[in-house]
Image (cartoon, rainbow over all chains, first blue to last red; front, side, top):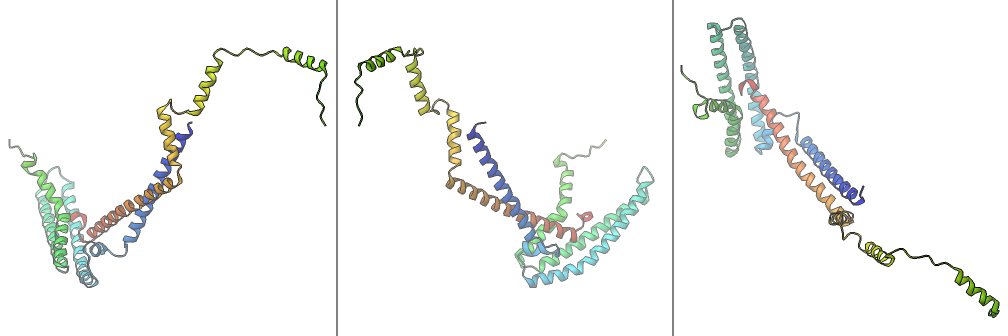
Length: 164
Length: 108
């Protein structure tokens, strides 16, 4: 094999190895240094540049909200089991299944309202600009998914219900 | 002290020996081929463009200052890009973690 070709290919491989190793090592180091596994609220502090006093207030709100959220989750899980049980037997939606589905929807709506109230309380514990940004971001992340589904179901997007 | 050989018999023997040597005949176009080989040895890379380009690149690669500068630039670029990507990944992971706590999946 040509000596020059070997030198050029070797240099190329060495360059790729140096770039890749420095990239992966620094990425890993950065992730490890920025991640705090003991604190679920770490994102809020970093993303919204909060000081200790603001974080203390938000932590208090968070700890007050968590039992309510857990209680709602238990209720939701129980209602979902009831819906599954009601739908398991027949091949059509019975009156009982319809009732359970409505209750599940209502429970979800209550849970979402409670969640939004918490987001609003947290946003008010932040500086005004950061609070607005937090609230917009949380609404986008938690309610945006439904909006996308609803938009995809609108006639404008080509989803139409043909009447016979 | 050296004494010159003035023996006439020796001179005659020398002439005979010179005459007896057989000079081999040169191959056809000997002189032309000698010059061609000299030219090839002086400029071996003029005839093939790609080989000369590769040789030049290899020679460039082996220059210590350029090699060190390239290694340093690649390492720096890797560290900068890795740090940027690491920040993004850490930020995303922290956001997902917060969301998982305050807004469980069934609600989203």
